[in-house]
Image (cartoon, rainbow, N blue to C red; front, side):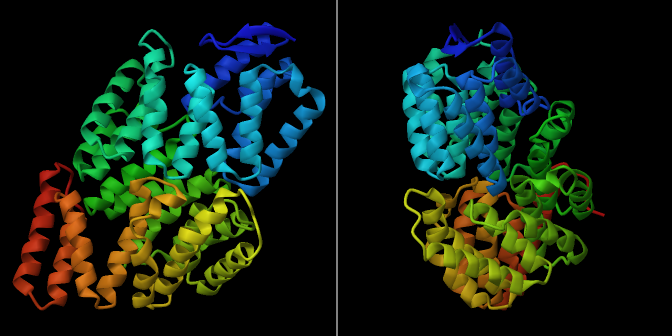
Length: 474
């Protein structure tokens, strides 16, 4: 095999130019979540089945799904590669990637993240290592690494690089998760000026708006860029979820349900856990608000029944539990909890999901079951000790807000008004312009018998919705 360099000047081994070209195209497509991100690696493999980076890329694509069946596929892919290509024939960077894959196959997300961080420090233009590491940081909820992993490599990149926009898009998301919304928005918009099709940069900016309750701006931002994100990419479902959240904040239930039916709970997303998390999280917010969606919960629960047969990622388990409870099948959610308890009773050294499940996943699932049974005080007891540690089982601040809302609603329904006051104080300090927060403040005041204060809070929520510039809810 001959030595060559990829489009960023990073050395790798490949038997022919065709394999290298397809590999470069595949990586670029991956950073854009483009429609060819699955096809191009297979074409590169057909060109050169021994190319280490092509094999690594194919395996990463399986492992990043957080799906048990695809993890098994990834394990077979890397085992087959090892059988064909001896390790002593690999370049040091390629050996490090194989080591990262090996760790991820065994469930060691933390170890994978560490190997890839070392890789990008030595090879700051290894954009595949950067992308995969960034995703692992998201899966493990490591906000500082989401930011700093990318910050470390930025000096090696410039606006002349075709993928500089997506690199900035990753940095923007890291800044947002680390709480620097002003700087994140600035970097995200710069990334989009360089590359308007960077759906991850779009995602970073809409997170900024979400975290600041700038829901009117969020809707307008999305609608102005509809051609760049709404279709023809593998990330569209999640961005549509954000669009639905903005409309939920504004009280536009008809739009929320239309997005759910036409953009979220659709083929082929029904076979992918990370996309069905969006479906569960959206309907769960409606359930917390007392809006019955049984006819939508039932088919979603059937999908989740097929997706969570074995433990893989605790964050997915939470969304499965939501679906089972939402569909009225609390017993199925309880079986999921018992299954994970049995799994924890065994030894799983080095498996990151083991700690995630023990510390966060199981308490959250138990709280969802308790909520579904009307045991609201129990739900509060499960969530209060871990509410500041939810990042440990991954996701973003916006996604984990479903858990925080569950805690707040359980506190209100159980009459734990001191807890509700504390939680609302925190929410108001972070997002004083959120109509949801003011509506909940009104519920708290009403529970205390303060009807005038409750009316004032409801009026404030209405004022904020009108100020957003969005059409009034029907």
